[in-house]
Amino acid sequence: MDQNMADLFGKMNEFQQKMQAAKDSLGKLEITSEVGGGMVKVTANGNKQIVSIKLEKDIIDPSDPDMLEDLLIAGVNKALAEAERASAEKMQEVTRNMLPGGGLPGMDLSKFGL
Image (cartoon, helix red, strand yellow):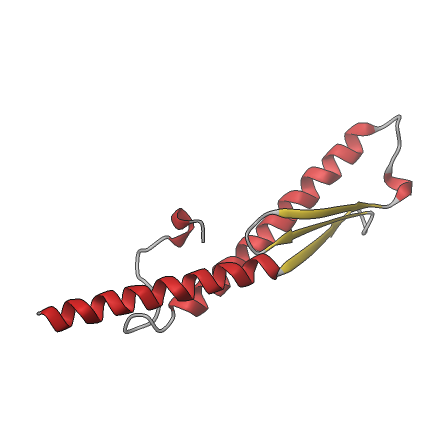
């Protein structure tokens, strides 16, 4: 029984290290989304954080701030959705071989910030 517990703790430690490495690599991954025909570009990292917003000068119209606000919201939402997909794919790679059949059934890793 002691050997089984040692093996379990070893596997848990290995899993935690792989998860941390995956999270670190997600911080370096950048996803750029464009809206408004490329007039607004929003870049998010794999940790679902916005890292930059680029605006074409033509999109800035002081008489129509609502349009710019709408485009910013759309760009941020699109970038975050794409970052979420990239993050989920990376986590699936990490967990694929942890259990027979791949993955961790029923475990939502987003609750752990992953």
